[in-house]
Image 1 (cartoon, rainbow over the protein chains, first blue to last red):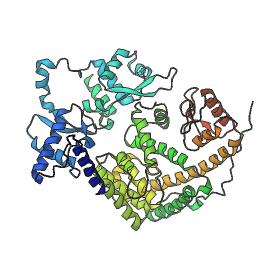
Image 2 (cartoon, rainbow over the protein chains, first blue to last red; image 1 turned 90 degrees about the horizontal axis):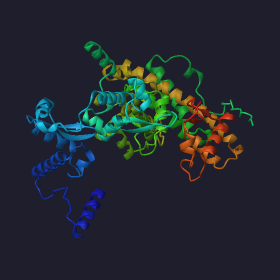
Image 3 (tube, chains in turn brown, blue; image 1 turned 45 degrees about the horizontal axis):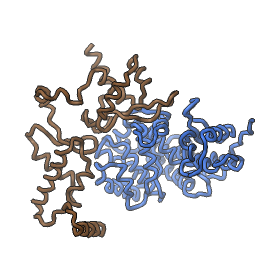
Image 4 (tube, one colour; image 1 turned 60 degrees about the horizontal axis):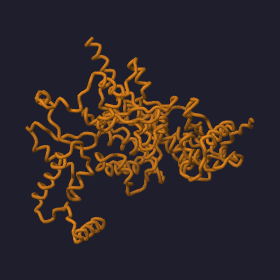
Length: 209
Length: 319
């Protein structure tokens, strides 16, 4: 309780100093209106962000005691029937169009230059890194039977899907590659455990052949 | 120049030890498992709580963190080996991603620093993540109450079960909570990552779905883990004593700080942890001096090279 009190008094002082203070608590509103305002704020923050927003960041725009999870649940229940949804991804929440509309979005003209289209080789390298991380270029060469170009890796790194991991214990101490939180978000994974089981993948692959 | 290898003292009679009736044979029934666990925990508690026995507790908890990381990697289906995890952790440069294996070891090393006293540490909530933060207190009090009535082993099994019932993929959190309940029951200031060591995926699945037999299997494995930890604590006490005994013979600058580091870390990378500065101190050491010191410690027989590589070596007093 004392912590809250000091926080509030601290804010009051800032207010007198002339800066406009962001009112988290909204004490002057009746409870249901306050809740709606908090829902609105949460939704606005999520809408404005291209990346998932974590719990702590959302908690900063609503009152001290308000449960972010409950607010999210209320927003989600209002979104039924909409072509987009509010989903949990990479340790936060984000807005996303539903997958059933993927074809429609692809058919729209101006999406050709979106950064998240992959060549087959890029996809292959990304998969190899995801399953075998941390792995360096020599390790990738063992998998693909040929050198993986630095350009390709740089492209993946530019898209923030992979990052430098620990040094490989080989001559020259090359960097290994690991996947990033953006990778998880892009492929709709909560953790790396959501990657398809490699055993099951092999079975599917042999069916296709 | 060659050195006379140090004789590691084999006289373990001064240290508390497990009676033979605890270690011989398998525990079949609930009564024997619980009774033996009581005996093991008493000895383990004596070993780690009394500094007079000379058990390097930081080293012990870091080593247990590695074992726990290997075990939970298996539980989570990644199957990383001990060497992979150690490399991922120690070869990562500060500020760069460690990858999933290194992160897992970092998780357990962080866990070993969590205070096991009430009220719960903020670091604990950071470890379990925001999704479970609300449940942590419930889980702990469930385990605590069970510990009061049925003993720590039952408390550990129950808290694991409660966590896994909430989320069947939270194995590492389940093991962490079990360690926390154990540490609290024994009044340890910090937890030791004991529980995860010998558990398997299917045991945990049975624990959630099955009856008392499944709980007994898990408790049997927890008992084995406690026995192993006791053995490890005695082994480390002995090796630490050997290292402390030769420490005055080392005349290299900063050798005392390096010895202290070896008594805390289960793996020491000379090129990053001893030079350019000995980790945690302001004592400078050149690359070459660090390598020579490690080589000398190996020649003296108190430290082992852990990787078998010619470069990127890691040294530790691990048995």
